[in-house]
Length: 524
Image 1: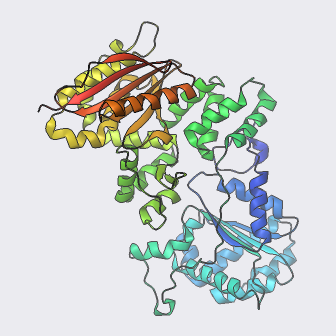
Image 2 (image 1 turned 120 degrees about the horizontal axis):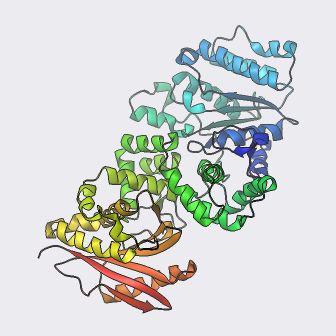
């Protein structure tokens, strides 16, 4: 029986697949044009699956040398001769898969090749009457090794001389997480590479690479195509459009996340509806996996990146998205950050946001104080099992007033969202979950959806800036509620002062019922 592909393998007959036809056609166009390029995407982003599908599309017109550097030991890169021997061995395996006989493969073997220049000449000779495409997967394994940089330099030299001498490869595709074009910069900054005088100012071994602008994320329509594949076998009767939109809300089309949520729904099993997606997303974010481990590792390894993520998620600070900033570029390379339509930094998807918020909570001392106020969970649950969000907010206001003082005002303004999420998590942990609406995250406001007992609660958090701003916040909240076909919402504001400007109250606003509270702190 077929499954959802969460392993990174590339066997379409074993998995429910998104239709990759348009993506492969776009990449094929680059190959036909003779482009050399890299496919840099984060872990488990469907790179290997895409490469396999591309090879199948090219094999009738090109000879594909497809190889994988994953698993190669250090001895493979110990010297030029060792690298040449490894490269030609991998090439032989690929040629065999492509159906070349032993005699033809022996010509490619190049037993006496001991240097990168000799390898380049040999490959040119072998490809003289052929159209050869080189594909290297998991190229990160070699990206910070000098001998591989020399190999890239040889490819670059052939490419630049292509008007005079036919290069060995029609097209070269390097696939991995790291950005090869800036690898020397990274190596120099880490102290593991020193430029030779002959290199001058040219420190990129891959500045010939064409821009790779093919969107590899799954759109809602892509997700629908995978669900249709599933439905042909299972006939669940799901509303594919709504399910796809809900999955996209959490994942922004991150392939591994999309497949993982579908896999959880299928195997638990959960209902193929929006509540089922919500539950699957909760389970997924709380299940350890290498993707989340890598995410945490990178936040620890790059403190400035962690600061940007924290300020974007919790502080509501807007950063301009510029690839000139090495930390923003690293965040994009690792799949953590992306640009909004107006070129501001945002976290790539709700799943990553939730995982990183959880990480920040565990690192913060807030939890120890919230436990005192959220220990008795039953007071927050109604007799029908629904969450009593009004009680949650009332108790939170008591907590904030009791635990924080005027000296904490700067901390509160910077961390008020995190404080509330810590408080909320202590109540719903294990039984519900939440998601922050990415498009409403800024310093002035944040919209949160809370999912509990198959019910959705929408609330807005903001800093109190007077009655006029409060009315604007009500307008924003009711607009958001209407878009979600909901009639009830919650507005929670924070104010640095001895008392709130008004009591907790319920208001009717533009056809919606809004429960409104201002959480005051300080002892002026």
